[in-house]
Length: 360
Image 1 (cartoon, rainbow, N blue to C red):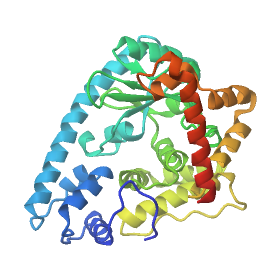
Image 2: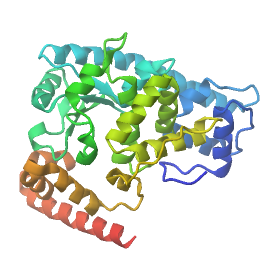
Image 3: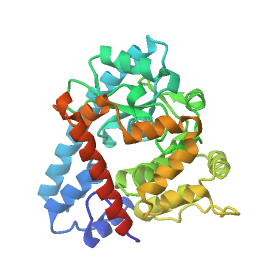
């Protein structure tokens, strides 16, 4: 298997063992159980591994997987009640939120919602609804890091009173405009379905397209393994006709290479058969640059400027001089008098990062 960046580096033995387990074969776990547990927890795989227990596995591993699985199940059940409250609160203001990523998949593609860990809940609304949505959630007890009008990107994070109760509210599917342009929020919502728990989620095809794009748009191909498992699970759930339409949509959006790369990587880890084969497009897709691990931040900024069009001045202003609200969110507890120094600190930090990435 070729290497990609990951949150915690897996050893060769851990990679072999996970591959064996997820393709239905029995294998002895690596000796370093403590490292294995840290890695599988970081990659979001422990609840799934608990469903694959073998009698031969060490008690230390089994007990830890059991605790993690039960903890995730409890969080998931508590979380769905909270999200139903969010749906009602936004619905009272005429807004139907679209749940995406982990929460949507937990409600639709996993046998049990507790099998899909997630650190937050991702919701998409239309751009014209963002301000009202934040106000509705504030009335429900959430604290927003900033208002949408001051956000440098198309999302705002809100924290609830309970630990881990975090909502990422988006009004575009990606902060990378080159990719966000491929998805219209109203169309996604109209083509979606409503789960038994009352959450509106994207269609199966849209979910797979979004999962492929998310992997490269926000994480530069970093392979948190649960995201790759999502891709394999989503592909398996598509009918032959849906797979054909998925390919058509990827071709129209010029993201065939992105989708092929994600599915190929997912099958390397989680499938015993060959990954789906897509015909290569007749020309290099511009989106292929998102697959480049050396893609520089400056290239991303230039791409954003190209895509921003009528909002370029606002984009540059918020990039160079974030709002005071944003700076306070970045540096909690900072006094107003310290803001000028914080702006300088931010600028110097950005310059150092750019220099180091350019050198590396």
